[in-house]
Length: 357
Image (cartoon, rainbow, N blue to C red; front, side, top):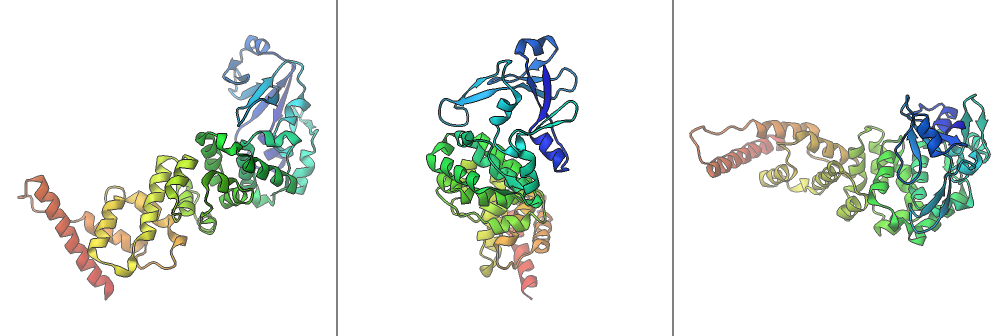
């Protein structure tokens, strides 16, 4: 039984990037062998085990063969005679197909080290286009490694476009699509993920639209690492916002923030009045959820040519409205709500008169 460190951990070590998790491959063993040694099986589709002490994941070396459509359309062979080279051959990129043995020796049958030196993202084999998820994975690696000057090689880009055009992307679950998207949003250059998907016609295929604001995403990503703000800056201006959120299966927090951001963008500041301001305050739930509102305001920063009401103004408006109190003598709920609305409206009128001076 031979054990090898594989994939991202080896790649990141070679790039001097902090290794967040380690994946191991075991060659020359069976499920029974690992169970006897105390490993706990957790994989359903193929044998993945937790180490009895470190709890890191160990997988039996395997081969895979395309048997149907989509990311899950494969049959696997994980017999004890599957070699390390055969296991590495099924991986997506050469830089992810490098292994290291327990002595620290590198095994690199597909020239991943050379591609790391050349800063190239290259597919391992011609079987690359059998898995549609690789379109999103490679786009994510392009965004993750852009700051190190990595680029996708031409042939790999063509294969990604081939997958997009084939219709296989539609077989991916929305959960898997968001898994890759969510990871891309926290990279240093998340806009590269989406520009790559545009380049290989993936967004055009799954969304039937390409109206995403890459410039806004690029600029806001220099100022914040908050993924929900980054997402909103990308999609809020689109006329297809609901479809984008649905297709990508964005979490509720991201969905809500992007919708509030859109309301802020569409708010007509040229005709400022207390009624329109109160309507925006109500529709965005500013007084109950101010943190969310100000995150949406930040996300809208590079989607508006000019802004009359800046963050300071909105902070003043929030404090002003939250500070309005009514006479305790009013007892009935409907009269309380009416009086509170009227008093807040009057406060806004006064604020706007001072603002216009």
